[in-house]
Image (cartoon, rainbow, N blue to C red; front, side, top):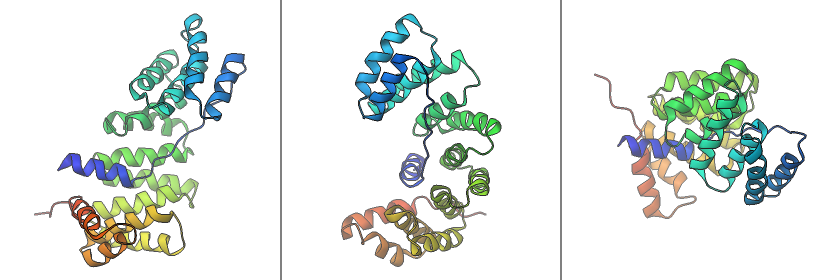
Length: 241
């Protein structure tokens, strides 16, 4: 049941990305151009040339990690970002990227990377939002909500943090409060279909299965809507003694 909950949370919580810094090296510029055009394999070839002679080139390692992520090589990306951290233990870009990569497999370790960045970059809303996601996946909902609120203090209109906060409230026993927030976001068109899906989660957890099913059937056939509803109910926290 825990794995089901983690999978569902990953599908509805919204993570944020971070930009890669610019560098002057010609191979780095070529790699950046390849990444911008959606050609990670070209970037990897160019970066491999640089890293053969400069294995501790931080800029190349960071871009190699990003290119591997784009190419779907998550294990290789993990290695690249860890090598970058070995070169510069305080590099926030590498920690943020590795943390995002780890969200699906090791939320506890992802949290440690996000905490390091958040401590150094208090206004980094993407990292604060991802920190909340990592904590929610672990069931640390109060701490997750604190991270989302910190992000919203910096940027009150950050839609992903608004939705994640509402969803976190819903799965931590405050489903009606979460549903109200998500309904407000949906009514003003914030978040598109994703906010409607999250609203269905909150409604299901609040006990309003009929309305949750109605929201789901806007996009799903009845059988799929029923299956999704069952999954959302599985997120409901156990009753307190």
